[in-house]
Image 1 (cartoon, rainbow, N blue to C red):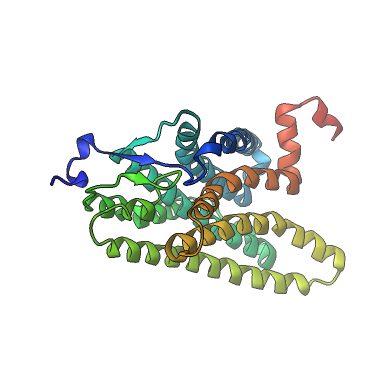
Image 2 (image 1 turned 30 degrees about the vertical axis):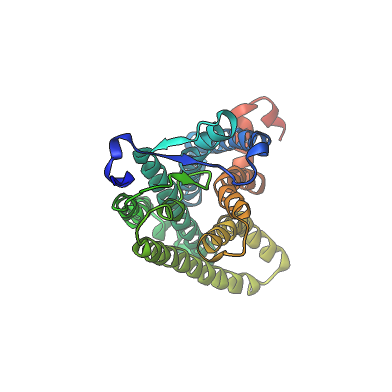
Length: 316
């Protein structure tokens, strides 16, 4: 028998969407569509605001720009195909297309986590080393951090497509998911996928473990510094600068951790629940991140209003 993995030119997968909820997927797609529109509008608006306003060319906002770009690419790699499945029943995705989608989603997910760590470092320097802020977070250092973020996401996920490509797919080609998630695809193989599972676990532990530890240590030091400030007003002002970042961190890591654990160890969790949570991780944070920063950061809020409502912004 010729294996599916050995006939790449004519091979394809079938994305099932959310198993057991096929009859209501068209209704589920409506909020996803509007969320995606808001995601595009909000992210592009904030990015344009940061680009056009020289006063926002600061490390904090440059890191935010990196985060928003990764959010846009990650969500755009998944949501359009997801909507095609839900709306028009266009479930087929080519083998190569599946590998590209897999690589894009997972690599930019790691880049986003790395940027959150960089943003935590930025807040640490700003609050704990304020007099050295401009000398530590220079443009060359920010560029190096950006390059390191891209290399980390690319190199760690680069083996994933090759680990899947080596597998023979003899029978089932139906992916019970809304996108080409690495383990969901690997499970279809008629061969041992131990290497895929182990490597995916190692990458997740390295990335999430290191990044969460780094963010936690940074904020423990930040909290210690805040509590040692002399006045309540000073503590409130300094602490408010971290609120947006903390909200974004929680939005990023809580669904991601649930998705990772349920995909590998969630034998008692309904597949539809696992897939919904995993999909929400790609849908909701990219929409909320620019909104959170827009609401909590006066500079972004004011300049975004100026960008779209120049007359009205004069009275803000």
